[in-house]
Length: 83
Length: 251
Ligand SMILES: [Fe+2]
Ligand SMILES: [Fe+2]
Image 1: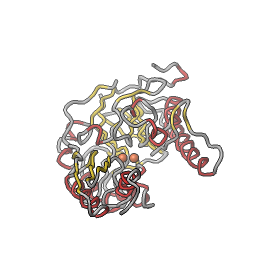
Image 2 (image 1 turned 45 degrees about the vertical axis):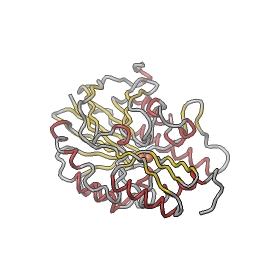
Image 3 (image 1 turned 120 degrees about the horizontal axis):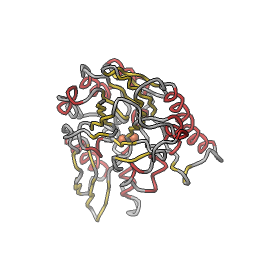
Image 4 (image 1 turned 90 degrees about the horizontal axis):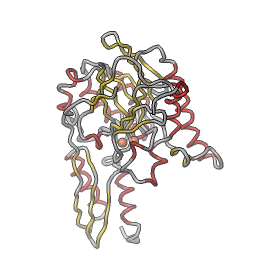
């Protein structure tokens, strides 16, 4: 992919959102030289790996640094009394 | 006391198997019903929601859901709905349902809802057909929500279950530029017009959990990436405390 660097991160963000394997809107994408930094929340370790793979497909010559966080789904501690 | 478990934005897809199930182990001991606030899938595929439905099947408390924007993405929302209903999850869109919890009638009105923005900064159904369609969709769903809630007037407790946010208060943490895509005050107005005890929504993954409608009705954003648990539990007294705004609702 050869694009203007000003728009490249947004194009990657949009492509990740529109890939059915990912479909994640909340990713942060930063590109510095030939490094792609990915951030945000993901729901599983597998999705995290998939995001790295898809990003690498999109930008073959780049180093992908995936700093996304897997969100825990543990049971809540206490109930909140609302009324 | 009625205990409401709620979560939204589970975004099930490939590799999601088993994400929720371990966290549901004690759910029946901790809550009387489970409400799902939409975005249950990534792409809106029936196969995606099937994985979630298999984890929910057999949960021995009533389960009620609305769909979210992701669940509409590939145009198969009717199938998504059927998969959930086959697993015992009642799916609401502009409708209401009542559940009996130890003699207390708990009513839930649900809609996906939609965007537009908030008071002083809401889009208007003016100009291009695309803009009219956008705001018109929110208006239609908000009207249906109001009618559904009004129709549940005989219940002891009423809950509005949405995907999009009815207030700005639970969006804090999101970028201001996208507020019009995160919700609309029209849904808050619908709820304030007829009254409710609690409003639940998802969609705003980076928002905040707690807020109130202009008339004072508690609102909780239960987007999973925000609450970072399998679900949250809210307890309500078994009698209505919040009156319709017109009758002097709390602030
Ligand atoms: Fe979502
Ligand atoms: Fe959403």
